[in-house]
Length: 261
Image (cartoon, rainbow, N blue to C red; front, side, top):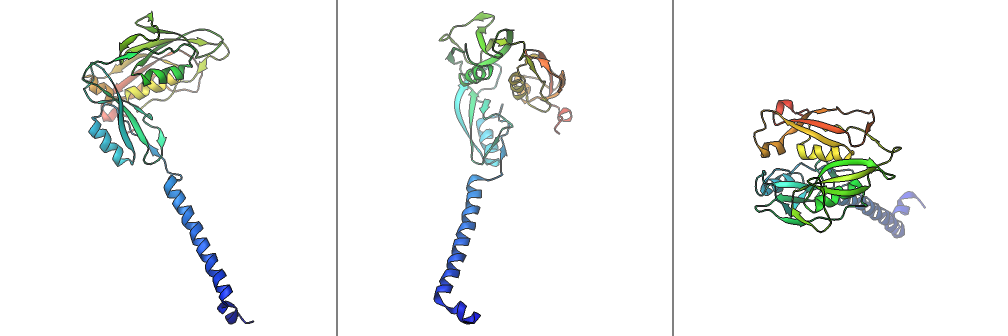
């Protein structure tokens, strides 16, 4: 059988078309899968703090993500209705269309119930405080067999029991354990971060904020939320530091001082 008659055979024709169709389906499925899962594409979550909800929604839309207000706190010095915190945090990597949950500053103070954080890890306790609209204050380290295990919870230097009703936005200090063989951490680089995110990162590294220094460009609380870190002491280092050590941050809204300009 010559090549012409071979390809004119209906069985061979059908087999060739079947191979072509299957190949196109496989290629189409692979492309569709990449599109649906946004394979290899991640979006950096913007910092929505101190924005009006409308501005946060616009900013989110530009970045192909969504925002939703799910809770509120009351901060006396902060503008009413502005975004106080967000989850996922600014700088997180997410897929297109991801929903970012916002906590805003309410018009009137809100009472929340103090949770029982004893026995939690420091990070679990911090997440629980945030979910209740409360803030982490100082980490007070004491000798214990388990590092970063919460032993006591304090409010205004007094122990506070679970179930106590307190104002949202209140700072809660945690007394946490420190094992002598697991007591070191590293100073993170927070240069260019806004105040709240920088404080959050410092805490995540088992360190305390000693002081916040704002330059002359920061006029009010709203400015402080938009201010970015241009210097920190001690500076970011690979040299180990004892957990619970202090970090001081220097902040400004002057764009010339922004390390990321």
